[in-house]
Image (cartoon, rainbow, N blue to C red; front, side, top):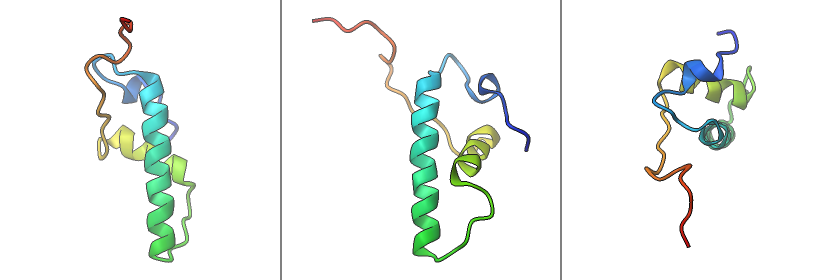
Length: 72
C-alpha cells in the first residue's frame, strides 16, 4: 500500500492527533508482539500500524468531547 493520505483514514471529523497517538500505540503493540513471538519484522511497525488503520482492521475510539473547549 502506498502511503494513504490522512483524510483517507480519518472519518466523521476524527482528530488527526488521535490518529498519531493511535498509530504510535498500535506500532508499540506490534513491536511487543513480534518480540514475544521472536518474529523479525520486514516492514517497520509504524508502517504496519498505518496500513491497519487504512484497511479498517484497527479503529480510533475518541471521547465525545475531544476538541471541545474546556470549561473551568
